[in-house]
Length: 261
Image (cartoon, rainbow, N blue to C red; front, side, top):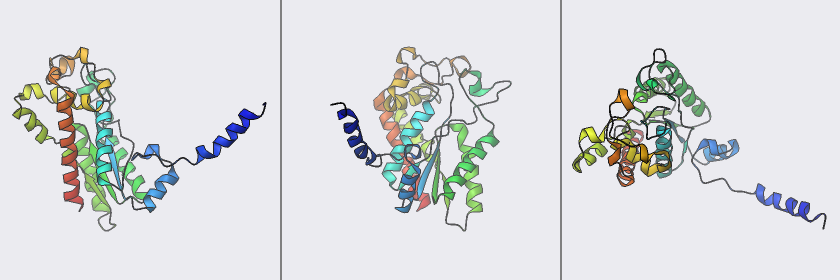
């Protein structure tokens, strides 16, 4: 009787070691040997998502862009197949630090200089190229990230033009004019839709991660310099967010198919 528990534990250990590779597209959830096996099996595409850590009004958490970008990258990678996703980059340009400007006017925001952001993106791309990825997609969920990602893609494509490597800035994910037009067709005004933490942003997060929206704190925006909100989040719904999310995924996939094939 004294040896039953240790023996049972030893019998269980081999079965634990035989666990299968998890159903994930995220590099950070895989071992290096699992990544190597996927590369050997034809996985040649990787997404580098960028987000930001910034204020999003009193009702939405600072990590809004991270949650939206992880969900979007996951959906895009799975629809494409043979695609993995690098850890989302959450340190991006958000305004001057001293004196503070932009989102840095609000506690919790983290900002880095543009040249540091571009260097971070570039070295991430170079790292993944070194491991054998041939198609590297840069997708950002914040307006301030777009120009830097495009600049890095242009530089590296010029450098690697004879190497069979493609670096694509997938701008269609963020340039969601189709969703804005859809909301306008439903009768919402531009001032209600907003451009930051309003109807548009809040609806998407209500669909992806409703636990990160403080519904009781939602109010029509008083202005960026007052509460950080431009738009009316009280009109947001998860149903509207689902439509916007799916439209952004479809737009990104269409651009990738058009420009990489």
